[in-house]
Structures are given as C-alpha cells and as structure tokens.
Length: 339
Image (cartoon, rainbow, N blue to C red; front, side, top):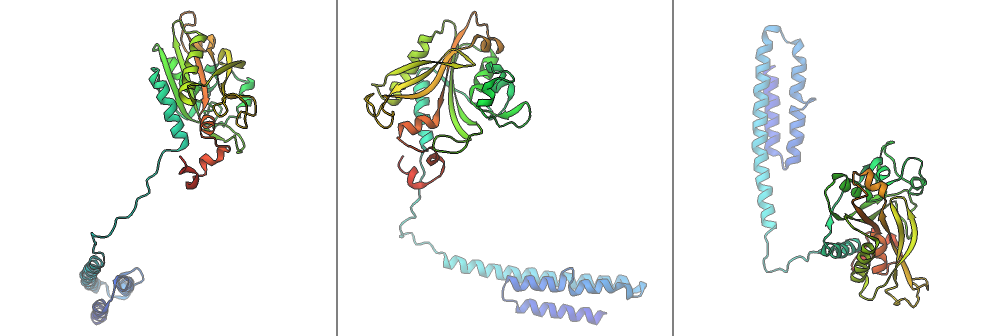
C-alpha cells in the first residue's frame, strides 16, 4: 500500500511539473484528488486493510494529498503570475491615442414634457407629490365617489391583484391620500404611471402616465380653475393659446368640464392636427365633489377645491407632433435622437 501511494504521489508531481496551463492543473486535481480520483479509490479500499493498519494507511493518504495540493497551489501561482505579466505587456496604454467617444443619452420626450409642465406649476406654487402604483380600491375608487358597481369601474378596465388591491388606473389616489392628512391648504400635482387593460395601438397602451392636479382651500372657485389652466396652456403651448371649457361628467368633480386648447399648429384656422376644428381636447377637470371632500375628512362647508387630470403622453404627442404613441416606447435610437 505504501509503495502504491508513493507511485501515485510521484505521478501526480511529475504531471504538475509538466502542466502547461491552468486547465491542465485542474485536470490533475480532479484525476488525483477528486471524488473519483486515485486517492479516493485508495480510501474506498480501506475495508480490505487490517483494522490495526488503517490509521497508518489513512495518515499516508493524507500526507500524499497534502503534498499534491501544495504543489498544485505553487504551480498555479506561477502560471497565474506568468499570465498576468503577459497580459500587462500586451495591454500597455498609448496615451497619445485618441479617446473612445462615449454616447451620452438625453431626456425622453415624456420626461421633457413632464419637466416643462412641472416648471409651470411649481412656478405657481404647487408641490410635486408621488404615490404607490399598487393601490387600494378605497383610494382608487371609493374615496373618489366611485363606489362598488359604479359604471366608471367597468370603463377603466382595471387590473385587480385581489378584490381590494389593484394597479392604479389614475394618479387621483395620491390626491385622496393628501386630502386625508388634513393639512391645508393643498396645492399639488401628482405625476406617475397608471395602468388600464387597453389594447396597444397608436393612441392607447396598458401602461401610460398621468399628471393630476389638486387645489383645496377656503374660497376656491371655478374661476380659479379656469385661470390656472389658462396660464398653464399659454406657458406650455404658446402665449396665443386660448382655452375652451365644455360641460362634462366625472364622479369626483361637480361641476365638471372637458378642456380644449386652440390649435397651436394652425392658430385655430383648422388643420390636420386639430382635424379641421381649430381646437384640441387636452384634459378633464372640475370642482372637487363635496362628497369626496367629506369622505377624506374635509368639511365642504368650509373648504372647496378644484382638480384636473392631464395625460402626459397626449401632451407629449401633441407638443412634438408625434402621430403614434408606440414610438415613445420602442426605444428606437433614430426616433429618440430627434429630441
């Protein structure tokens, strides 16, 4: 047994000395020290060794293993050092060569439009707030005067996670959360991503962005709403922009209105962008419904407010004259470089 172990050790040491690279050393390790290696086979044959000789044989196997492992590590360090030296010689840096040009990205059309919108409202004293994209039904619907079985729930094609948890269909839940805190006055805009079960086409997507606005204070009137949106439209689309309000219905506002702006492409004369009407539908708004104020813990006899909702993709498409919403999300560099 001693002679056999000595032979195995010598063959291993010779193989290590002749190894040309790390792969060869790894093969030697497996061949002699692995689970099916030669030393393991010796240990498996211990049952045939006399009980009184087993400790001595086991010690001899361990000594052979330690010797082989030591030589393997030493040879591995030598080869790794050689590889490192050769690599350093090959990778000498020529400081006179021109540098590699770095492609620097820039803001997405959506982000440009959002930054421009936020700049206007921050200038009017608004605060930008955010909220969770996974929302409770209570905040997304109930506190906004949309109770169970209300038709508006069907119209919004909601993604439900459980009966009471969903992907928000609007950023209005942020308004409800802010009102619930009871801190007055409130002047906020709430931008963020929302989700609805829509088919993807030129004007729809299951994931898009909204910017909701909310003002609550004493003595707020519809005139304040009109003046605010007029100011935003003129700063965002141009100083000659006119605003038109059309009666509408939203469960969370009363009275409610749809807002059109005069076409900034043709100046209201009629063109392809405004479909010949001279006006472009831009957002929905209204005075906060007294029940919404009450449900959020605000006394509607003391406070009043207005709210509005703007589709970020819609104003980005209009501002930059993009005719297909899908272009915003296809990550085509040729498209994005235009902005």
